Amino acid sequence: MDTKPLAGKTALVTGAARNIGRAIALSLADAGANIIVNTLQDQQAADAVAGEITQTGADSIVCVADVTDRDAVFAMAEAGRDKFGAVDILILNASARGQVNFLDMTHEDWRRVIDISLDGAFHCAQAALPMMIERGWGRVVALGGISWHAGFPRRANNLAGKAGLTGFTRALAAEFGDRGITANVVAPGSIDTVRPASAGALPPRESLPPVPRMGTVEEIASATRFLCMPEQAYLTGQVIHVNGGAYLGT
Image (cartoon, rainbow, N blue to C red; front, side, top):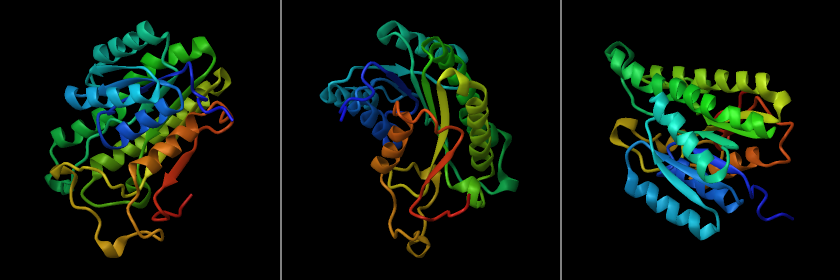
């Protein structure tokens, strides 16, 4: 069995300095991929992730860039091309969370989340996809969430952004499937992460799913890594729910 199935590939992971993004970056590096470690502003945390990547035998670069800044995103993708030759894998993980009563939600609250979820995905995909097309191979994985499938109050901006991100990803799957490129969504449930205060309270104990615990970032990273494997060339346009059975819909 090939222990480094992604050797020679390069993954751009947005929001990779901590939590799920960090776990995905390390998992892909462990599979042999070089990593572009993106962070909005936490250079120190991103540098620490880069150090962990080195221990797997993979290489990395750190790019401090706001995914809503188109010029910064294209510069980041070009830095990846200069260092590694191309971007082969795009992980759309950058996001913003918060809980606000809908009638109290400002337009700024709305735009902050939508801009990261949708404009950020748009810029990153337009920067990376031409390189994938050149190579005739690529993987796009977007991090969605259980919320827009199940419906939650006080998160209209987040649900709208994640729903749009799923539609966006399926559009990429439909348009680029004949170019050797797949595009899928991993939708986490309640995951044990370091959460900012703005993210809201954790779910109460009685609301735990059939698998009665919170998920781990490593479990999300494992599902993401699976979708990036070379042999998953026929799996595209799908939403993979990783939530312990909390959402059992289609």
